[in-house]
Image (cartoon, rainbow, N blue to C red; front, side):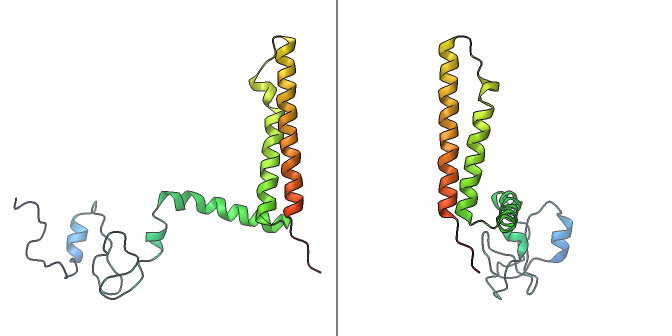
Length: 146
């Protein structure tokens, strides 16, 4: 039981020593830059001095790490084309429907006339979906201000 506590002489409110963090490089403890206290798990601010945790805590989540480049790409394309966000989403859906209609023949082959007719109906449905998405994008586009 004595091995459970790393430093029995250190009290909870005292900051960890820097030598302790250097001795255990695998230890994942973040300390406040201002006062040196350990951050409470999941906290954005230091519970002693109120200093923010910093950019490292916000970028540590896997979702934020992978979605941030996608969001910046989305915003740069949106500004470059001059569309609203809803119009750009409708454009992406329309392009996806067109790609689905084009590549439908790659995944499915027609062995009979009935299969060929079914493929043509599927292509027609995908192209109608693309047309609806493009029309929605046009209707959702914000008018340009002079």
